[in-house]
Length: 149
Image (cartoon, rainbow, N blue to C red; front, side, top):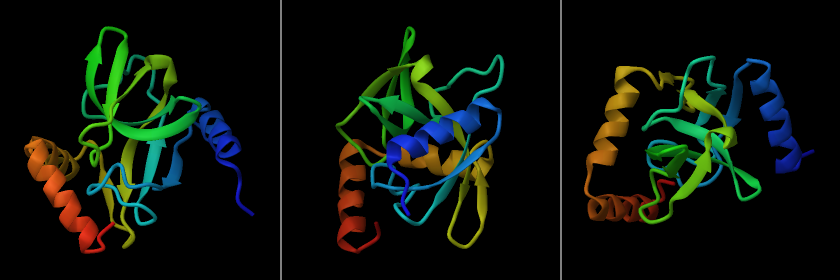
């Protein structure tokens, strides 16, 4: 039996509020190529006391009545600008109160884990985001046509 998204994420937020991490299977294509639909899992943890969301963090946040997992691309005063790694146009904006937690670990299908604070994940993220928008768009199309979703 599948749990409706609204109820699922209510439970996710309750567990995060208790200080426990939550593991979520990726759904959707907006974080390609670093996180892939139905392939990767992420571990989300709430920010601790004194921790603040930073540019580059991949966060779970509420946006227009649903939960989204995207990367913080900028901060504008008390607001955060977010985007999926596979989105080259769409941006979302939220407040700190809308952010439930940040991705701290990625689990690949092989069981291999990547710490989001680790050198490998940081390099992958920086390299992908450093590519010009047009090249990222082209590479995403090639991956899509190759069936790498």
